[in-house]
Structures are given as structure tokens and as C-alpha cells.
Amino acid sequence: MPPQAKALFLLLLAALWPVWQWVAARSLDASGERWGLLPVATAALLLWRQRAEPAASAPLALPAALLVLYAAAYPFLTPLPRAAIAVSAAAAALSALCFGRRLHLALWGLLLLSLPVTASLDFYLGYPLRALVGAATAALLQMNGFAVVREGTLLNWSGRLISIDAPCSGVRMLWAGLYLAFTLAAFQRLSGAKTALLVSLAVAAVLASNVLRATALFYVEAELLRPPGDWHAAVGVAVFLLAAFAVADAARRIGKRANAP
Image (cartoon, rainbow, N blue to C red; front, side, top):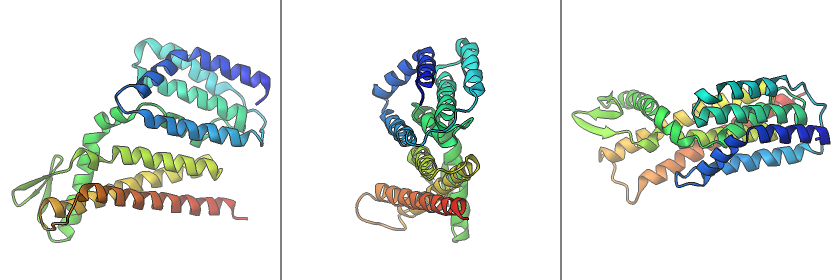
């Protein structure tokens, strides 16, 4: 990055200083949001690798517009939306200065994932995802001959209620799947369209894996199977590995198609 571009980017970071203070405080408190440091480190590695392949800078209209939006909306927004706009402005500036793009989608995604979002995602998406997983699980079990119906986040099997608990919402697995997708897209140099495709496939893979987890745990909770030990954790790890493999394979196929002559 040229010295003038570095100075401009440092000025942008300084203008957004209240956001970085809030992110640091949330990442280091007792809420357990420290995983956000991982996508930051990944983004830093991506930028470090790019230093050997400098690109012509793109126009800075998008980061400037986002900075204006941040300033105008600051009094009316809570800290997390402010941080999302600030991170988007920083991602747009880095995309223009380091990659010669208006917006590097994978870099933007990694920086958004660095925000302390898991508690908010649990609050806003936890119930809808559990209901969605419950509906798909009930349909799958009905195909297997069980008279199961979903009631909210419960599965009703002949009057016996089996809960779709918070881990089965898959919020943290979704975060991990998105991190994996953005990382693979970044280091395989996928275009914005192919990155969006990979991210969509990652979301689908995570949702499907959670349905498989809820279905497998139904047999345990209904005492149709009595496996030894803590099978909740084992099933969770197994379906996450399955989802991760599916995302990695999709990235490989998309990357191979993108690099085909």
C-alpha cells in the first residue's frame, strides 16, 4: 500500500475509533466473544499475502459514502449496527487500496464476523432457526414412519415432547461455516459472485447438518437408542465435520471451475 494510501486508511480508522473501543471491550469481557479475533487474524494474513501483488487502487467512493452514513446515523443506532457500518467502510477502503476492487466480498465477510455478533444472533435467529430445524426434522421423521409433529421448538411424538435445544439452532455452527467459506474464498481468490455462491452453499450445508443432528438426537431422547456416554457432543462434532467437509469440497469445485481454461 503506498504511503498516501496508508495515511488515508489510518485517518479512516481514527475517525471510527469509538467503534474499535466498543469492539475491544466486548471481545475481552465475559460474554465469550473472543472468537472474533480469528477472522481478524485471517484478514490480516490475507492482506499480508496481497502485499507482494499490489493492485491499482480503485475509487474510494464507497468507503466515503459509508463514512458519511456512519456519521449521519451514529446518534440513532445501537453499537452493533454502527460497528457493522464502520467495518464495511474499512473493508471497502482496504478493497480499493489493496485489491483494486470496490468491495472484496470475502474480506468484508471476515471483518463482519470479527464483530461480537454471536449473542445477538442467538437472540434474533435462535428461535427461528430452531423452528426451521424442527419442521425439517419432523418431516424427515415422518418419512421414516414416526408420527411426529412440530410444536414451536418441540417435537411431539405421541404426546411425548422432545425439545430442540439452543445448540440445535446452529447459530455458532453457522458462524463457523461462514468463517470457513469466506476464508476459502479469500485464499482461492474467488470472484464476488463465486464467493456469494460458496457462502450460500455453506449456509445450506449448516442447516442440513443441524437437521441431521436433531434427527439423530431424537432417537436418543426418545430412548429408541441407548448409546453410552455423551452423544450430544459427539453428534454435534460429527455433523459439524460433515458440514465443514461439504463447504471445503464446494470451494474446491468452485475454485477448479473458476481456474479452468
